[in-house]
Length: 299
Image (cartoon, rainbow, N blue to C red; front, side, top):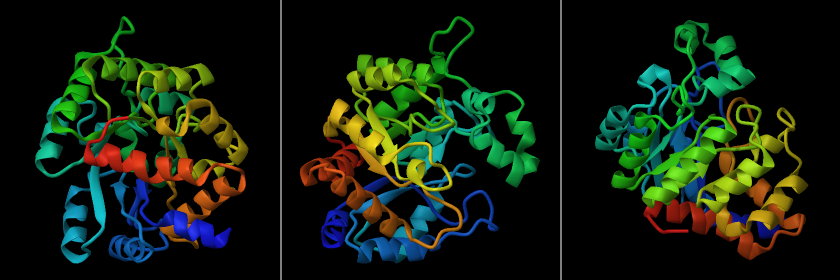
């Protein structure tokens, strides 16, 4: 099984990783940005997306690419209040700076604040950012319809051909975005860890988003001892229910850890194989789907 998991790692693309520093320099990682890129390359990964909850990662990825070649590291921006919120103008500027992926708000979303999700960590680790959490962000207007800004963010992502993930919006908001994405023909929407405390989507919302063409993300982070929000067998059941063509597998692990991200991804893929997920399906979710999202293929 260990040999199989090593082989499964080769050619993978992780759509949800956090580098160092994330949040602040006191929260360490196994590797810094350059070490992570070198190590992922040495393990045969095709690449990964670098996300930060605080700042856009276009500048960091630019320098990574200068030093580490032959691996695809993708920069992203999270549309939190700190950098302008749900704004098509902000996203357009990010694209011009090289962003190839974006996330709707995480710790400044109204849903995350209401659920005391990742915003709770931000309040603890960076209390100076409290002013950005006074009013949570939503893609809904007063009447429960998608705001024009939310629609325009989808439009910008569609025109720029970048990946767009739902962040920590509510399940209801994610379904509304999936329906709008389907209507305009946008095929690069990812429903961010719907099982997380920060999102807490219902089974019906997950299924509906997938029917609309959104890719459903299942993270290793949700199974880690610190989280324990999802049993591995539950993820296997969802894969069987939705089909591998509708799912992506990511790590989303950050903070002090003894294992580098590629090793954690290897462990994740090996675990799913042990639980009976076929090699073909694992490759579909960790290679084919994420690379199609990044490179422009359709579901």
